[in-house]
Length: 344
Image (cartoon, rainbow, N blue to C red; front, side):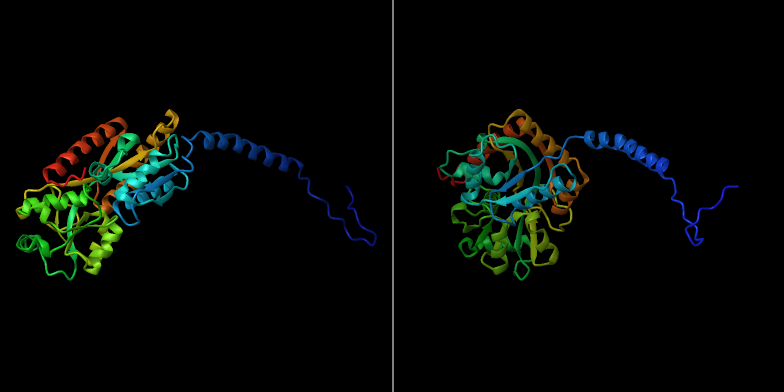
């Protein structure tokens, strides 16, 4: 029998466990797992789009701003892109932002949130800039305009408002978050025409986006406002604002109010928004932006954004979107001419 080793004085000496084979086995297992996992991480779909920025051509709080920040969050949260920066550059009804985008030719990491308001601004102002000088990415959403008043307004329904407006157009100021030719302005003028009021008699006050317009409505600076559903969703939900009618052809889910046509006014009008990029993009950058926005549109997170803001999916990518914006420019110029409101 083998003896037990002892220290001087008789105390036994503890033997160290032999760990060589166990350590080797652990190392082998780790390396084996790494060989399996690393290729999966490196090959699981395209890399997220990095360093993406979205320009908003009006102040915070408007429809372009809500659309841009919603898109940025979905792109980042779903891993389609890394962190996305949203920044505002307002001025001249969106023309300042459009000029910035056209001036960044070849920048494949810049998008601009835009829509009918930009079309109206270029159609009504003496500017050489136009959406034809950008790279079309996609039309994203469409939404109804709404006729809205503060909660303490004496007008409880749209018929009462329109009766008062018809009786004294100069005594009731209308507010909108777009300049001449923009969606809020066009909807207001078409509403006036449908009510029997000459557009030239309308007192329309233009604000630089939905944020400043909201503040004006709550302060009582205007008798009523025309704007997008999504821009005032929180204030409608809280009861600070009262919606009297929607301008779309159908009622808007979540709003228990009639359409203008149901109220006896033969007007149907909707707004739309989308994304464009600078001109002169390399094919790879153009494809990367298009793929990222298309992937975003297919996510459940984006569908939740549509539902929360009362928006409808209006997907129209690339070249089809370019043809659409060209047709919209002609339509807006015609409407402004018919209303006697063209400024160039």
